[in-house]
Every structure is written in C-alpha cells, then in structure tokens.
Image 1 (cartoon, helix red, strand yellow):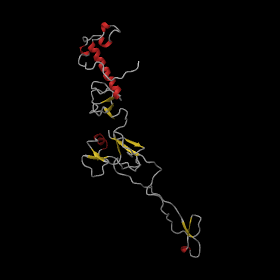
Image 2 (cartoon, rainbow, N blue to C red; image 1 turned 120 degrees about the horizontal axis):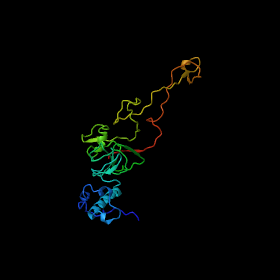
Image 3 (cartoon, rainbow, N blue to C red; image 1 turned 180 degrees about the horizontal axis):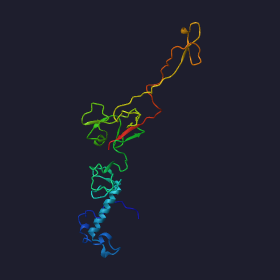
Image 4 (cartoon, one colour; image 1 turned 45 degrees about the horizontal axis):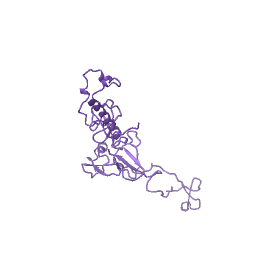
Length: 267
C-alpha cells in the first residue's frame, strides 16, 4: 500500500477527551506490556485509542512538514538532535539529555541552525559566491554597510563594533567590507603578523625590503671620468657610481586571481 500524506490528524479534537492518566489503575501491568495481541476484550477504550493516534499523527506531521519535531519541554534531546522552535528557527542540541531548556533562550544548550534545517551556517560565518546577485535569505553582502543593532542582533552579538570606522550611531554597527581585498588569517600569537586584531584596519600593500646589486664601470681611455659607462662584472676601467633601475610595474602587488563576492551570515 502506498504511503498516504499526513494532511489530517486522526480523530482531531480529542486531546482532552481521555488520556493515559485515566487509563487503568496505577500498577496495571498492561501499561508497560501492552495488550494481548488481537483480543478485543483487552483493547483500550475508543477515547484512549484516539488520543494515541492523534499524538502519533501530530508527530508525523511535524516530520513531514518541517523535517524535525516541534520542541517540547518534556522531551529528552540527545547531542546533535534537531528541533523546530516557536520562533520559526531550527536548533541543534549541544548537550546530551537536554530537557526543559527552551532553545530560544537557552543558548548554552542549543545552536541556532537557521530558517532551514540544513542551512548548516553559523551567525558571523562567511560564504564566497561566484555572482553578484542579491544575497540569499539570512545573508548580507560584505560591503561595509552600517546596519541596525536591534534588527541584526545576532550578528551584532558576534562582531560588535569591531568593523566600525567612526560616524556610526549608538544604535548601529558596521559589517566587514571585503570589496577588493584578500583575506589573511589572524596571527593569534604565532609571531608572523603580530599586533593585529580582527576588525576594520586594512593592511596596505608592500614588498619585503631588499636590494639589487648592479655594478657600473667607467670605460677605459685618456679621460675615464668623462667617458660612457659599461655595466657588468666583465667591464674594464674604473668603477664609478651604481646605477638605479627604471621603475616598472603597476599600482599594487598581487598574485594571479579571480573576482568573487563575500557574504556574511546574520541569522
């Protein structure tokens, strides 16, 4: 038989009609062992049967429509277990035996996944794309824009005012500006690029200090100081001043590269 969709719950509206709290006396072994197979005399009353079917159908509807069940305070979530919260976001459990911790407010117990169960990106994470279309939902283009702290509170909690340049209001903060620059990982105590922090400062282009040795020799003749010069170790005559090469190149130092666009996650 083909699977049917869970568009309608079994026996809707019977949640309060009856439940297991009123079924059988306390200590009845059938609460843990179930009923004898196929014997009508031991079957539960219709109200309790409906209540069970209703619960199962509600859970299956959550899975079918959302991919995860709606969070419940009495449920016990294992490490990595997903749930769907009342704020419309998906969360992942950060703790084993996680119970009675509302994902909307219990940050130490849950990681917000996003509007999609499989979005897999954290707030403040970067993503590089090969086009310049409008960012997907939950992402902003890294163009140095000044945005509202309250409207983008989760991103502000991650980066704060690290990328502010001045002139922002107390209710605003600036997102990173990655236009036209290359990334460099934080030194973080290694000693190669020390003294820098994550933030708005740009490290300008430069070449490592170095020299080039070019020898210049005056040509031989009756008046060596006034004659033309020859360059190279094999030239003859008296050595004179060193020669400075003619400037060449462009306006920056850069490797071979391609253009891309960088986004930042705000949800």
